[in-house]
Length: 162
Image (cartoon, rainbow, N blue to C red; front, side, top):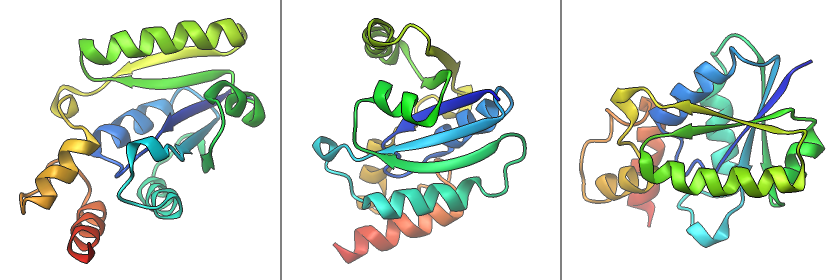
């Protein structure tokens, strides 16, 4: 069984994330979506909310079995824990590549058996970043082009509750 791991903070999950997930499920038998705790990013949504959001937003996808799980360890440790042979990473721009290049090199030093596979975001989604989507929503901008209707509703409600 080919198991892939797609890690991220997903605060919130965007159309860019969903694009990568939709293509990753074609590469593996099981895709684990690892939702990182990542307190340093000061997430808007709680860990449980982000996990539930991803479960809802990926429920309709065909292909591989999808398992959404939180994690708070080193990525390579979590990859071993779930039995992943590959880590799936999305790339939007050259700036992403530099960071991802360093991460891949470090991960390979820790475990040469786990490959990192890069998928380029669809050009329609390359500029989308969760941070920017939150900023647009907080300034009463329209986020419907960047997130699903369900996520847009969640995001607006969360911002209004602050």
